[in-house]
Length: 234
Image (cartoon, rainbow, N blue to C red; front, side, top):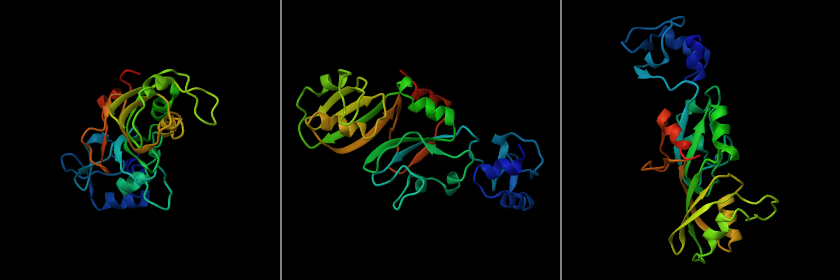
């Protein structure tokens, strides 16, 4: 791919902007040699103002989504893309969220420009585990784990039972829930079906990929090992 098109697709500017960067000598190789638009050079060796380029197509990010932020490109309030460098909004192919977390749910969110990978992660057939920690307004009764694991729980207004899910009580009003589906407000609705109400909700893992010590609002790019952990156990 022409270097002007490559760098423009990464969101660093229009093709006209990038052509100007070449004329200004701002684009070099890893040894500091000035590059020209028709040069043939590996992506990893290209530098813009001395800094490596963002990864090419196939980028996967993990983000600690804070409360009050929407998984949307357009919203009156803050959106997840506000937490990323501005160029990430205009990358081509587009960077999309892998599923959604609602405004009142925090935790691990994935974003990628790889459509095939996105669909592989969210497909119910893949049975990728999503792990949530919830605080509740009432004490657990003690029968929720059996109810959620039964595979017979039917949510209000739905006609298909939920796949079995695993509940671990962490305290009288604190629980960890592992699901393999991604239905609308699923975790909140599951606890509602059990006669309880979710007060706070955070996603802490997808597969074996955990939120770890990533601070709210922080993000990092994933490598191949990280991506493999998403499917561990699936």
